[in-house]
Length: 352
Image (cartoon, rainbow, N blue to C red; front, side, top):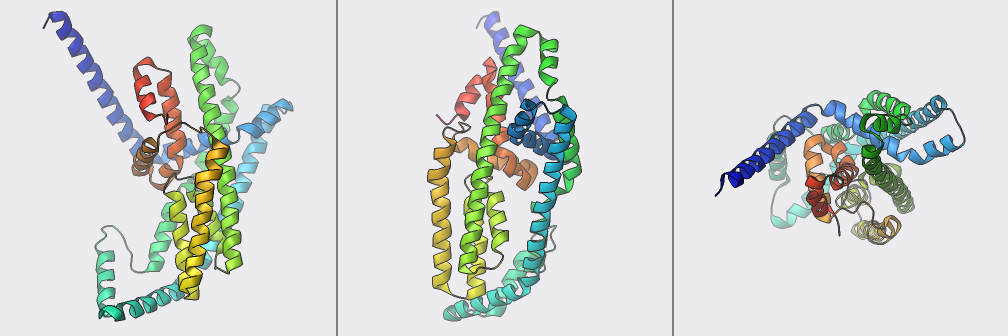
């Protein structure tokens, strides 16, 4: 092997090593500074999602400062109403948990009597399982729900950060393209602005359509459960709306709580099966027919990429990371497409 080939090989190994170190440092920073990056990412995606009304206000020649005030007030009002609705339903649900837990154990006793297993044995196994979870304090099903609810909505406690980030992003929105041109020159900045516009359009279209579809699905679920007389129909509709943003598994998970509540509340297997069948059919129609037809090509991510991004961002930031996984991964893919060295990775992430 010639010296030139050895030198090129060493340079390639050095570059790969530098990239690996850079990615490892980036992951460490993102994970340890999640308290900043989660509200920053939510603010960024909110700016994308609100792009259409912002553009409409811009065409109406509404001043920039007034646009920011209108958008921020709208977001704050939505968060307040949404949080109030969720809080009321969760409190009511938590108040009913002792009754549901009692019914749960009565059903368990009936089921176990056929296998000659005593309820005390099951309760001991249940208590042993909960106590084996290190760092938790699960002494009852009620405390589990309280902790789960706190984890699920903890990122809403960063509302102040989200609003602050969003105000600064909206304030810089009009001036940012001019600064890019000034920094990189007119010719070099063209590709950068084109990539940013593609990211803006892809993420904005995805979030707009996904929000509309998820909201419609949540309304249908609440209406269906209300007609069946299932308790907390609004809560399960809101849960469906939120979980539909988690790809692949979100819609399946959203079916489980209302089905279990139906069983515990009515004690009727035929009615429970009917509710389960209707909800599964609804999610199947929306997920396999309505959503693909409305979203078309969408963000052009392969199912494996979506799954891996769900696992990665879920490990990084928990449930907020799962909700943000698809738009963040799509933005990364589009950015990779603009760089010659990373273009092969973008092609591997693509759906087709």
